[in-house]
Image (tube, rainbow, N blue to C red; front, side, top):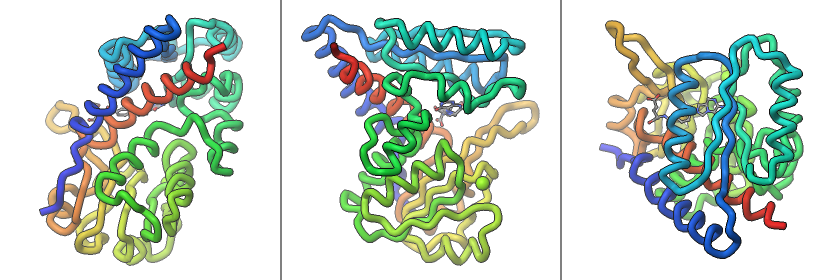
Length: 286
Ligand SMILES: Nc1nc(=O)c2c([nH]1)NC[C@@H]1CN(c3ccc(C(=O)N[C@@H](CCC(=O)O)C(=O)O)cc3)C=[N+]21
Ligand SMILES: [Mg+2]
């Protein structure tokens, strides 16, 4: 059986470090690192995530501000709110929950955020910084995956990694971080040929395709490390059940290490969001 990479436990450690950094910033500089979260619309999954983010921030002694806007909010109203948060010295990090309702332009909203407060790391300046290896605010999910990978591979140099998925929020930044850690990186996606044999050659597979249980034991080399970024909510007899992109039970018999869903990458993502907020607050000290 594979070693379980417990994101709940590991994120609790990271959150303890966050809490002591918060205390330090309070004692030394009299600031309370503060995260503003903006949610447009009533998507139930987004509400769960936003609530969790705010809860974790408060547990760590950070400030949090929640802005809930109705689904019909205009681009101008949203831009005005971002402008206000950009200019509020009490706010160190800004997160606009994605996806936005379809009438809003996500690229425009992301570009409107002050890059120094962009704790998602999605602003073009931060994307460029990551691509050239000088990132300070790194996207939270890939950052969390790296912390998990380091548990198994303190030195990632030379590892063959396949990232399944090419999104701007996970696949692409994940590949950039792995490359920076001297891995040999392949990005696979829905048009990739022989994806199964490609994965079966990998020392590490990062699954971020957004397709429930896409990856089964036949795709995995014995002993490989498997990181499951998928969070697919499935309705089972009226109950919401979370499934990863990896068929956990079968893959866990083959892999050397594996992350569960829930309790894997998700909690690490939130911990890294708070790490980024601390980093942003430090960079904003006068
Ligand atoms: N601007 C922006 N930044 C994001 O980082 C962002 C976003 N928009 N939109 C949505 C996705 C998704 N995401 C998750 C974070 C934590 C869990 C998480 O903690 N999941 C728990 C389970 C929670 C549940 O029950 O659903 C777990 O995996 O154990 C999941 C998903 C952040 N996202
Ligand atoms: Mg894809």
